[in-house]
Length: 129
Image 1 (cartoon, helix red, strand yellow):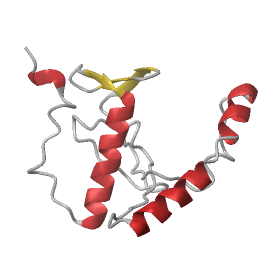
Image 2: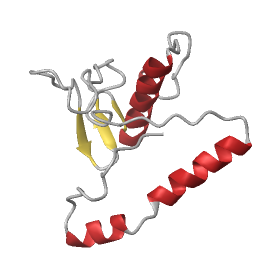
Image 3: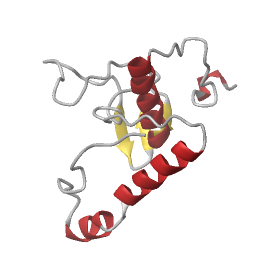
Image 4: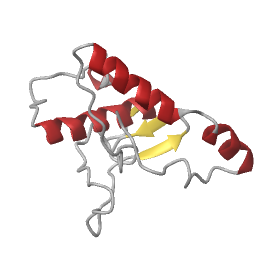
């Protein structure tokens, strides 16, 4: 699960959107997920999400930790508009899926899980004719 401490208090989305966002009880959701994972044999891993939305999963961009971005770091792709991300080679994918896949990469690195034998071909539509 991606989580950034204090992310709601630093939200800058405009008065109306901030009011709507800050009222969502994300802390309660996180607590409930932790409870459910203790009841069922599920490991919940909480990680910070820095640069997961900016970096391109398809291009394998590096994912620095929060506050440790190297000088000159630049994502190979960019967010086009709400919901869409354009990778370095021009492929357009769902932005949430790109961010989620990058969170998976961060957790895999943290837990020393080898993702090289795992396929996210559903994510990558470049193979479609």
